[in-house]
Image (cartoon, rainbow, N blue to C red):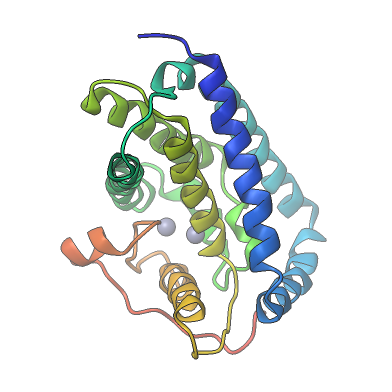
Length: 243
Ligand SMILES: [Zn+2]
Ligand SMILES: [Zn+2]
């Protein structure tokens, strides 16, 4: 086991660059920019409340420290640069996301919607009609648990595969995780004329169905695969307005 801090830095650089470029590309589409502005209007009202801003800040802070600890103590042991075929990159990305989604599904369903942490999770469920800012309005304990479940998926896959994962594969998996967790709270009402818009509307619609009240399914956060397997899938909801 080697401590490859250069690979860990490459992971962070890849994640930052892909996030910036991806956002620029997505918001160069006029209808996506329109959706962003519509979310901002509603978010402005939510963020005018001090308790909401404090809640977002507390979640952001615990996220920062959790990420920092992981980047220093764990990540350099779990990533490297050894070249590998494209299929292996794809398998690594898929495995990280599938293992995380499975662990998150059961944590969300049994802890956050069970007796133990229901009250903690109720903070996030105050949003009956989520918009962008609600992805960050999460109790710090929930942020910590959710983030740890994702981060630990990286060394788990490295251990299963018998060596470090490629830094770029791990960064792409992280990008998909962070963006899907934000996108699924965003309000969207997009044209139905292409697959990209339909996919984004589906992603937001299924998580918005989860937010209708605390007794609705759709517990997984990246795909609806486990909800369909374990019988907790709910049809997506459609909203005419963001507020
Ligand atoms: Zn929930
Ligand atoms: Zn949510």
